[in-house]
Amino acid sequence: IMTPLAYVHLDNATLRVDVEHEKRLQVPLHHVGALVCFGNVLVSPALVHRLADEGKALVLLDDSGRFKARMEGPVSGNILLRLAQHRAAQDPVVTLELARACVAGKIRNSRTLVQRGARETDAADDTGLLNRSADDLAASLRATPAARTLDALRGVEGEAARGYFAALNRIV
Image (spheres, rainbow, N blue to C red):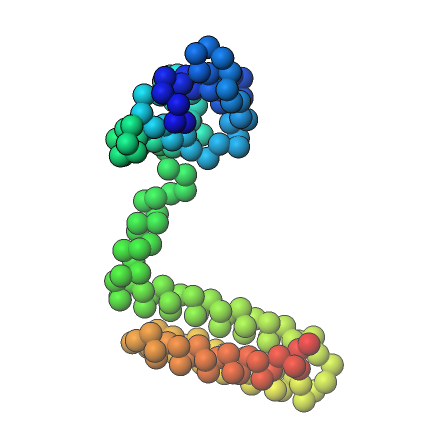
């Protein structure tokens, strides 16, 4: 809003702009991402509260467009969780532990599918191959805690993936 002395207020579920008591603009509030006011613009308290409730920003700039203030409602999403995730990503020990947990989960799931395939197949040679593949995946699973670096863990994951995909055509 750039018109001096414009009055911006709520009109039901719409944002309404009046200049000299005459309606100049009316927009459904759900179409508004943020409200930016240049210079001497009047904003109703009800609109300020509604913008805050909906997490929409109200930005105040002076007549020349210099930033004065920004008001925004509560941040959606859990910012504390995001900060903890960023801190964890910067810690090599935590990163390795999280990667181990992810790789172990992938190997466990792969092994479960291979074991199910071994139980459900009618071909005896497929059963033997799938059981050996499941044993190899179990060995890879046991190797995950021993991986001391991310590269070593990637090697364990790659070996497990090779064995799984080699057996996959016997399952499908």
